[in-house]
Image (tube, rainbow, N blue to C red; front, side):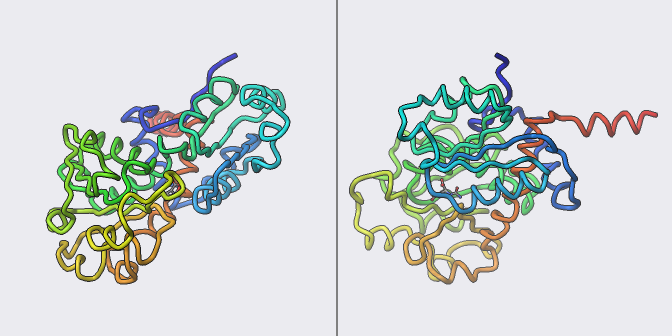
Length: 312
Ligand code: NCD
């Protein structure tokens, strides 16, 4: 069996591929690219709830004219009939499925599927581990704003420990040369997160004036048994609200992967703030996923064709 290209985390992409994905995203947002995935069968398997990621993968696949099959956990023999993950992957390969988009509460699950599946696997979020397409759309939203991320300072605030979004975003931001400040209480942000280019701060108010972008996170309550600090303590120290926004720069942008919890990590004044970029992020999510699907299935084909055209 041939192991085909998969996207488990951002490290699976070279710097050139990152650039290529961003270029293609811009192109796909400008003009409909046509049936680039015609004849390609995509299976979406989401073992955890999802609104944005699920819907945008579906739309991306449909826009590229792929065949789309959505399998929910209750449909899968894996869940109740004792079929192993590997045998599920073998079965789907034998049917001629080409792409599996997988979300699962267990870190490493998409990687295991990728080893058994003769096709492309895209990680749509695995436990606390990684969420590469979310990081791509987050990076793209910031690049749209700043062009270059080198020299920019991005704060990621809240439950870093349980956030696969944060884990993938940190990698992406470092790769593109941004300075990262992680902000949160120790229970959500152990000191071990500090590394070159990644600083840890406990005091959000002190950090705000230094940020070009602030990424807020939902507290991932489904991933731990008991809230380590009270909601009131969290809100008092880490909620972004009107008062805190006044401490930030006028031109700061605020991101959130969604779903956001009003009153907890932000209040309504953030949703009305000129720099609130949530809708841009969601918007870019569709074309980013189109670009990832196209890269994995078709490779980096178009620039080469364009070069041929130019050369003749
Ligand atoms: C996130 C996720 O599922 O990891 N949402 C998303 O994909 N946009 C973040 C979250 O659930 O808080």
